[in-house]
Length: 492
Image (cartoon, rainbow, N blue to C red; front, side, top):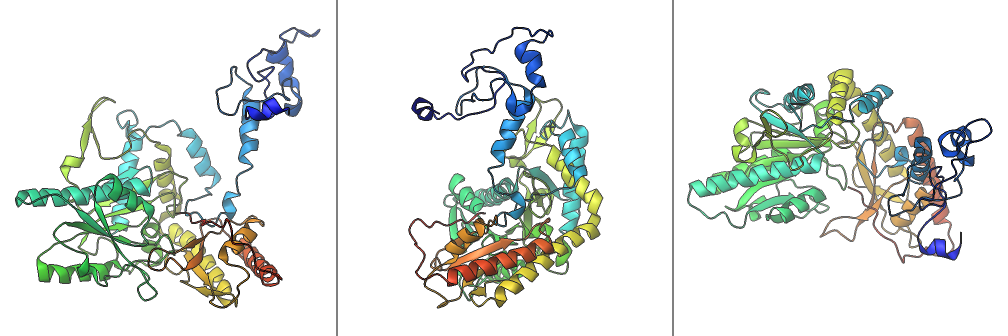
């Protein structure tokens, strides 16, 4: 490639449709056998030996002409190979595997628009079946008396839950003739970033309760210091993003009960079950965290995490219809028929809803339990092996959701840190993030592993060997590793 090509940010690409990458046509002269250049004979050439293969696609503008579908496919396919291996990505909570029948169903339903319920009434009916199943799974007093919806992911589900809390508070304050200025929401300092966005976007003060070695999660400790008449609610997290630990919902509710007895303030709870909402019902069925706790008015989850669906899909359910203020529900008519809509997004895929229904039918309660138990067994195995290593101390062990974190043991070494270990493991294909904990303990750096469906015990054993080899390599260094340029690789 010459200097001019480098300056334009172009690189060689296979392209059977352009002669020079800018739209100059290839010859269409017919061969002695009657084939015309691009239309016929070029299709007979091997894919990497076609006319125009040495030319390139422009990177940042639309090509001038079309290309053969198999050529465009090969270009995109080859570029995507530069991504990391999704199965070895232990940073993300998002599902990276579904079975072939789910993949087939996905391809068959990719054209369905979830919001067009008049056009796709059966998909709409299946959506309702799914959230009613989830309402029952979360022990709603009555699935028929609850209300819910699918969303594009758990972030939208959380924001809808937060908006309902805010509007409920506003309506109550107006009925009493009081100001609706300065609403606040109480959260753990280890809260997922979507709640920071909610408070920012919807003008709500975020009141963060700091975590510590003594109080590793929001557990109701000192809650009275944060609650006042402007508090719209408390968010309890089932599976803190930083570490995977559950926040004790019943314990938080008990603290709010005491506050109500002393002040008269009736503060409700939204449970962010992005991960734990599809773990606890199967692995900790006796744990009181859901609608069995009366202060819980809404629960959200991410279907593309431990709901086992490809991204993106989330769910949010309210205890009763009255817990979702009717002012937040819109009646949409211009897609045909009358459709209630309560969402931040409008058009969105319906395929993932069908995938969730497929999994509910395919796995049932016992199948989900087996899948989630297998993931937790691998997490507990990994945390046990890592906990045995002299270099580390566990923060938790993966017995809530199948996620755990560890820190470097104080005094172990001054030659390397967990960022260096993360980089070393990346060389072997593993993506395992290192990042600082939230404010008040931000000087503490941890690493975290998320075990999802598809990380087998065999792969986990290979990971343990790679961690041991990497630690041995780092320990054997004669001089400290450089610290310049190290950045957090925390992934929500």
